[in-house]
Amino acid sequence: MLRVRGLSMDDAHHLPARGSVEEEIFNLLDIVELVMGKTFGLQYRLDLATRPDKSWAPTAMWEIAEKALEGAF
Image (cartoon, rainbow, N blue to C red):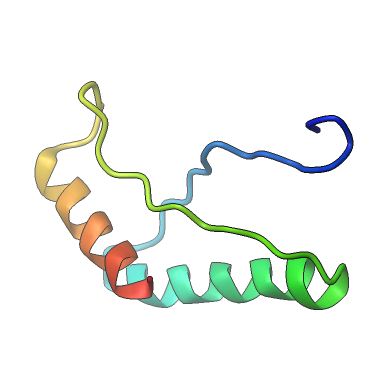
């Protein structure tokens, strides 16, 4: 917690099956809205993080994930 005024979670990892990436993103965003927005009435900001210079996953896998995330924003 940052001075009890905010919570910062830099990243999260979720590994859905290949055919359900976009569906899972929307499900996760629904959960965020339910908890942060509707339950606690908080305003929040989501930022899209892209592939870091050092990553363990193949480039093609990152591209699939980034395109799905961009579609959700």
